[in-house]
Image 1: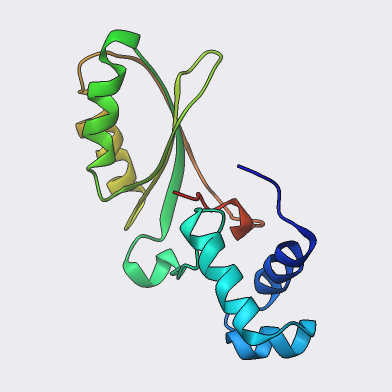
Image 2 (image 1 turned 90 degrees about the horizontal axis):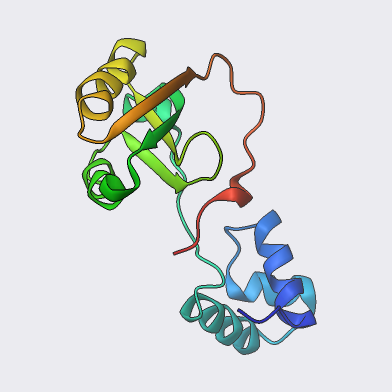
Length: 151
């Protein structure tokens, strides 16, 4: 992906701080014509450089407990395992890693028992899983939503 030009960078920076503004409001704040703002945002979305999204507080969805899970899965079973866990509602993030573990997951549930049930029923029971470490999040301290994945 190419880097943002200065105008796109200004628009993106403004949207990061004020994501609910209309094209007209961004235009007025930055001194750029509204049609230019609209076209540039559409182009950035089409290039998948940005995504406008709604982020919902997990607690109102009944998933107030979360955990980071690290796994080592046999490499020849990794793709099959990833397909399995990506279908689970409780799994919000899956990333391949290097080091002692080859997968990192973010899992959430209604309570600690629900999170552990996912680990027990879907993770440790799966073929090819050799090691697993579950780290419940005791107290979120900070969450930077700039980390949200772009597809």
